[in-house]
Image 1: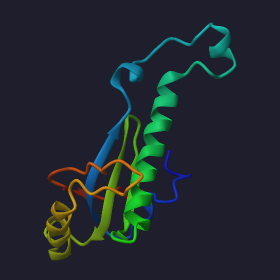
Image 2 (image 1 turned 30 degrees about the vertical axis):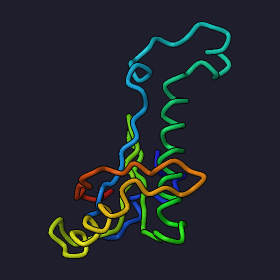
Image 3 (image 1 turned 180 degrees about the vertical axis):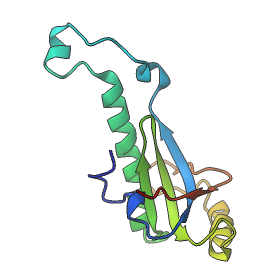
Length: 136
């Protein structure tokens, strides 16, 4: 799921990061369904849950891109795709009590409601959460 993600959290060298947004695919679409016997299902266009999850992944990628590239932000943003959602994180830290992580949390509260102009507000978590970086 993460192999094609250019901002993959799996590339982060630190053991901790700060989760700032989670995008979930609609839960109704994520329910297990029997294989489709319809024409559209047979030609690969009937999987709404996969489409919804792909759209969620693209949205998360776009949030990370904005966090990285916007001239007023320039943050080290990452994305982790899971089976039911995508998580956007910022930075790499040594521990959940790393002073740089705490400083970043404070900085993020100042940009709540930040708008990139042509994009909608980023709508980051009101309280970003320290998160362990998955190690594979």
